Length: 216
Image (cartoon, rainbow, N blue to C red):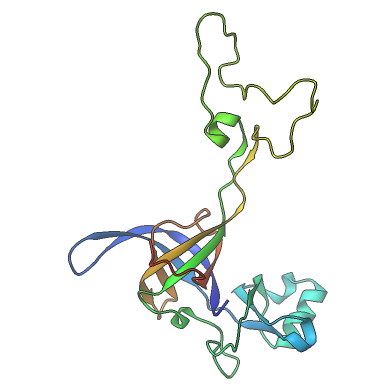
């Protein structure tokens, strides 16, 4: 991963391009993110940088975390995330300054990761888009049931991974190849084209795109 930043999803709005076309965007407050640790191949077995996001009172941090922040000489933060490095981290600011939205540029292609909204327990129709059975000719009160679970005597069990009712949402989701439409460096805001996972005020990670498929 060449570069990345932690942010908070603020909500969606729309912008206009020079031709007057409407562009739906998601506004993310990206940073400032202090560098809390730099991991190296020699010491940790891999190269990575650890960033923090959203400062908090030092009195609300447990002793192990307080020692971690003290060692890095930064204020305590609510969120810590790692970004793997494939080479030199030349995008990191010098003199211990925090990472801000300025590491990205307008028009750059990025991947956005977040935690999707939890929907609670859902049936097979809502969760997996199954179809209902007929509601006539004595089908009974099973119109929205999942239906057959598989064979009878052999293998005499339900295969692992069968699409059934269960918890829906609340999963780590990554949307790839989104385009940065606008950057407000003064307020650390990044407007990304399209929707990103999670609710308002949810934590998201913005990384340089892996596939760079031209944007969505």
